[in-house]
Image (spheres, one colour):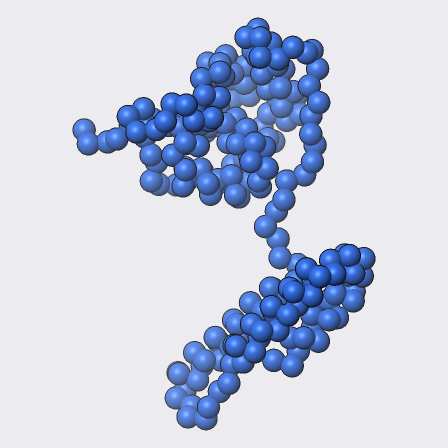
Length: 217
């Protein structure tokens, strides 16, 4: 009774709501319905899965980032078929992988062909072919040679030491070098901004310099 609907609060001229109105979601449901079985646990809605993949490529983000922003953004939830804001867990990033494995390469081609035909009939696209960008999406990965990762490792180690000291009630002072490590990290980042080519062409040198800068802490 007291639920607020997106149609009452969101701007209908927003690009995502305008784009959603141009997509034949019912036709897309029929095209991809063959990949779903009536037996077993019901899968995620096709509009949700196709919609989040469109958002993923529109904003050039990874599966994890697409799912995270879906839980936070009302316009993206509305684009994916929800009528009101969803406060719970909608889906996990692994669900996107399962969906791609479910429909396979042929299913992705059907989605492309469906959008091309629909928008061609509406006069929005005047071509018979679409150039597909196969650029890989960025992942939130921290490599062992990353100075930020080394800095976080140092913080976790000092945190563990401090917890042990509290449990055994040690009175001897313990220096964490927190301020010094932050200064060293900033120096590394400033040096990288001044000479990015040196870092990209000499990965081993980069790793060695980072370790030298943080080893004294």
